[in-house]
Structures are given as C-alpha cells and as structure tokens.
Amino acid sequence: MKTGAMLNAYPDSIGQNLGNLIKWLQNPALKEIFQSFYILPSMFNSDLDRGFSVIDYNLNEVLAKKDDLTKLNNLGIALKLDFVINHASVQSKQFQDILANGENSIYKDFFIDWNQFWAGCGSKTEAGYINPEPKYLEKMHFRKPGLPLLMVPMPDGTKKPYWNTFYQSCSLGQMDLNINSPLVWEFYDETLQKLSSYGAEIVRLDAFAYAPKEPGAGNFLNDPGTWELLSKIRTLADKYSLQLLPEIHAEYREKIHEKLTLEGYITYDFFLPGLLIHALEKHTCTYLLNWINDIRQKNIKTVNMLGCHDGIPVLDLRGLLPEEEIEDIIKIIVGRGGHVKDVQGNKKMYYQVNATYFSALGEQQNKMLLARAIQIFMPGIPQVWYLDLVGGKNDYTAVQQAGENGHKEINRTNLSLDHMENALNDELTVKQLELLRFRNTNPAFGSGAKLSVIGKEHKFSLQWENNGNIARLDADLKSCTYEISNFSL
Picture 1: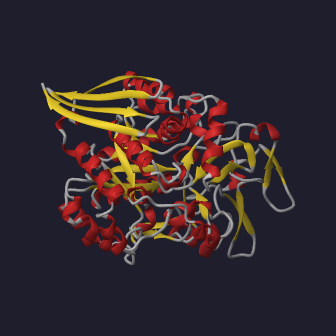
Picture 2 (picture 1 turned 135 degrees about the horizontal axis):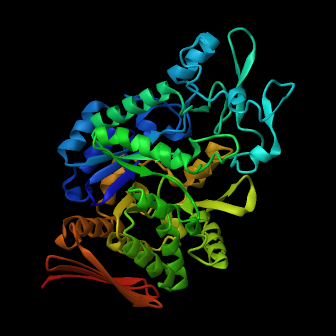
Picture 3 (picture 1 turned 180 degrees about the horizontal axis):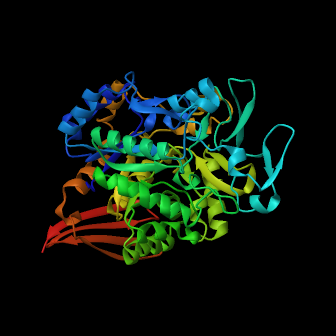
C-alpha cells in the first residue's frame, strides 16, 4: 500500500470529468506529488447524495471512463474507492425488481423487511407496520425523527415496510441491505472484485456501522455484530488484495479508533482537522502532541486530512479536547461563515461544521501552509482535498442553490481546468505542492521510520529518522511559521 500523499476529489471537481482532471495531474508541476487518489463515488452510477446513493458500481460514463483509470495507473497513482455496504439506491436493479414483482422477486429479502425484523417485538399499526416496544428502541440510533422505514408499494396494491435509514422515498432514496441474505454477500463479493479491477488498493467502507442490526441491540456499532461483519468483508477483500478503511465518526473517548487498530484496520484521523485549528487559534501544541503520541504508542494506522467532501469533524474531539475548547472551535469556524451540522437538531449533539479549511483558518495563507506542513509530518497517509490546494473559500451561492440540507456544498465547488492550471503559479499552491513532494520523495519517511516529538506551549518539533536520513519540522504556532530541515547522519 502506498503511503505518500493522496488526492481527494469528485471525478468532476476539476474540468467537469475525470479525463480533464487527469490532464491536470499530467502537468509536469504535479510530478511526484500524489501516489494515490481517493475518487468519490459519483464515478459510479448513482442518483443522490453526490454519489453515495449507488445504483450500481459500473462507471458513470459521463464522468469517468475505463481509459481514465488506465491513465491513472500509468501515472503510478493507486486508487481508494468507496463501497457503501449499508444501503443501495431505490433505482438499483434489486429494488426495482421488488417494485415490479413483489413477493415473487428473487430480491425480496435483499433489503430488510421491517415487519419480519420486528416480529414479536411490538404491535402492528393501522398503517401496516410494527411499532416496536420502547425497550427495543432504547439502543437505537436514528438519523432523523420517526421510525426509519418506508412503505413500499407492491404490485398487488398493498404496501410493505422496509428498513430505510437515509432518504425516505421510493423514487429517490436509499434502502438498507439485509446482511443475512446470501444474495447480499454475492453482491458484496462482486462489488469488491469490480473495485479491484478498477485499480483500487484501499476500499473505504461507508456507513458500515449501520449495517448490523438485531432486535434488542443497537443499529449503530452493534457489538459484536459490527466486528463480525467487518471480519467477513475482510475475508472477501483479501481475495482481491484490498485494504479496508472503515469510515466512522465517533467520540475519541469511545476509543473506536483503537478498537479498529486492534482488529487490524487502518482508520481515519478525524481528530487532526479540529486539533490543528485549535492549535493555530489557541497557540498551544499540548492537545495536538497528545494525539500524536497516542498514535505512536498505540501504533494506530491512519489516513489523515485537513478538508474533505464532508464537514470539519467536531463530535470526534469529545474526550480529546475539553468541552469548552470544542465549543470555541465551533464558534470560530461559524464566525468565519461555517455551517453547523447537528444530530437531529440537537445543538448539544454537534457533529461537524461545514466550511472550507482555508476559510475555517480565517483565509490566512500562513496558517494554511503551517497546517499542511504539520500534516505531512503526521503519522499516516496525508489525504489532500483539491480545494485546499488552491485556498478554496466558502461557497455560499452553492449552499443557497442546493436548498434544504445543502450545507455540504460550501466546500464542494467544481473548478475549471484553466483555474487549476493557473493555480500552479500561485504561491499558496506552489508551496503546498513543494511540501507534498518533500513528503513523498524524502527517504526519512520510508518504511520503518521513527518519529520523535518535542515541544511545549506554542513551539514544537517533529523529526523522522530512517536509515540515517532525517527530516525535521520546527513549528511556531504563535507566529504561524515553520522550518523544515533535511540531512543524513
């Protein structure tokens, strides 16, 4: 698995399609910058949630072609791709077959029959679905008010309830998969094989924590169901030499990231974005260095980031930062135009703040460069959101045009190929590319490298050593400056 810098973008983020994005990557100025590319799932056939409502895992020919993936391979760029294991679009062939054939559909058990799931656990309502007794709902985690079900019209005129965690509509929505169905496991295997054929090295498991469900247990991070599911999927992934990256947001104090490490998975460093903002605004390295030492001591394998297609995580920081410090971070980002994402509208259950990372830092180039310098010296694979490279600012127009629940569009602006080509002459972009090339090509970061951490208050140093090669970062959080030195013993 390649551990150098990883680009992160939609296939149409640069120049409207993956072919044009690859033209940008072929520019000599980008040589040795990216070793891998996390392409978001709108490269597949999908209809909602900008790719995460997958119809099937064939390529969306408007945005991506097989030849594009060949060109990426020729550039030596490996892929990280998404597999949404909890749900599929209502436009999928499996769900459409149910709508057409009802009880005669071979896929009738492909999705979760709500009444069959809750049989004996509640009473049936006049609407035709079982309302579970309160004791069964205590451990449930629902994404929105009400029960997560959809009454699906059958060909005979009746309606049948199916479990539906996200987007409740028979014309535009997502249906939860029944992991007890052999057909679902055939689908899992076929999908992983297809992702491997595209050139994937890493497969990000989206929404995996919602997939295992059983009466009397939680429907989010069900234990031991979650770990049993992951183990079975890893057995399939091993056939195709795929590394799994389970994606989950959870509070630091719950130690889910440590559990993933003990189970042998790499995990997202969702703590770094907020910790860096805190360090840069509060001029203290204490909490950041605590996390770095945590990674080292517990041998946590991570993919880290600054910005991404989602918001800046804040829920994750609970237990790592004091509560009042988290609140301060939220106020700072919101004060700079960010949008708060809550859990079911509960302000005390904050989840993430949507903003570009550059805007979250007050649109100050020195802070952006220092954040990037620290990122490349962090343990783990540095993932790079394309907008961060060019100092992307909050896109309020996109939010307004997207309407209700359009807050994520603030950090998803599509840029023209000309815009990105011209940015290769801008100081902020040029300096970030220099940092990424340093990270990718310097032997001090090689396999078996050891990290030393020194610092207090607003100054700290991160030093990597490998076979006599040393790379060192000296950072000053108060002046927002840094120096990088490189030498051999």
